[in-house]
Amino acid sequence: MDRIPALESLAPELQKGLDQASSFEALEALRIEFLGRKGRLADIMSTLPNLPPEERPKLGQRANVVKEEMNRLFDEKKAALTAAREAASLARFDASLPGRAPWKGSLHPDTLIMEEICSIFGRLGFDIAQGPEVEIDHYNFESLNMPPEHPARDMQDTLYITDSILMRTHTSPVQVRTMLKEKPPLAVVVPGKVYRRDSDLTHTPMFHQVEGLMVGHGITMAHLRGLLTAFVRGVFGPRTEVRFRQSFFPFTEPSAEVDISCFLCGGAGHTDGETCRVCKGTGWVEILGCGMVDPAVFEAVQYPADVSGFAFGLGVERIAMLKYGIGDLRMFFENDLRFLTQFSY
Ligand code: DAH
Picture 1 (tube, rainbow, N blue to C red):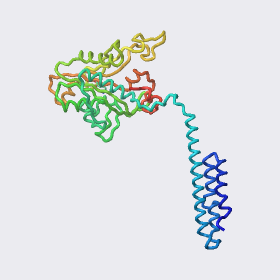
Picture 2 (cartoon, rainbow, N blue to C red):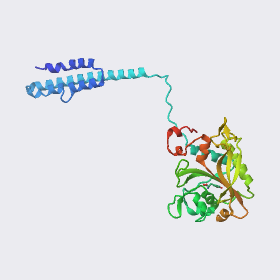
Picture 3 (cartoon, rainbow, N blue to C red):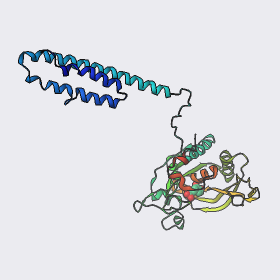
Picture 4 (cartoon, helix red, strand yellow):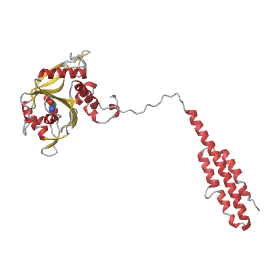
């Protein structure tokens, strides 16, 4: 005997099964049934040792031929199924559908406003200066005319690291750092983060300021007013007016708070007969603090007595809220992409 009927019927039976298989799962089931470790071919091979020794080699060879034939049938069917699957997915492919735009980041409103402020002052001849966020008491307070126990320190809820090291409460210490490094005349703006122990609807423990400083000979409050007018018109539009209100800061004398005419109602105090929601009917919006550098500050940096200069400080989030009509300060720091992606560059 040189043939075993069961062996000979394997390939034709497999072919029948393959003809009916329409999925990769069915294909795999057939492979296990016919060629698996405990499949039908293996079953027949396990009877080989029972045959007379002279028949074994021939049958062994025949079994190999059948196995190869079955593998070929599988490969053919697999290729056919793969081709059919690709054809089906191509049939669903619509080359005329609009594409999906790739994800594009956007700049944070704080970054946008700081860049805008720095670029306006840059065009007016100001350099950009920076300083550390972890600051020493001396630069943050003392050299700015706020000695220990000075009541003005209460205006700023300080986060202390040690008795003399703190998180800077404003960008004003960079005034002092700049003057210690450079001789007058100079003009700088200082964008950066500041920290205060404050957290509620309108205060966050970290926020951003831009400080400005100009020192030279013959610098007056008129220069300050002209410069700030140019600045607010750059940010809020050419018809914006400025108003100086007398105020107090320890490091400037005289000091002023600056209001701009309300950009929503144009200073009228109302829109469509309703009280203006931006200026609450006053026609003015407070925007920054400023003044002529106090002689005590010049003394702290050992500048000559004949120089004069002005300084100003503004809150970046405040400007962004006014400019973009943002009602809640916390939105700046909640990382909600629905909010952040509205500000493109
Ligand atoms: N440093 C002040 C603050 O954080 C802001 C400020 C006011 C800065 C007047 C100045 C200035 O340079 O002249 O509240």
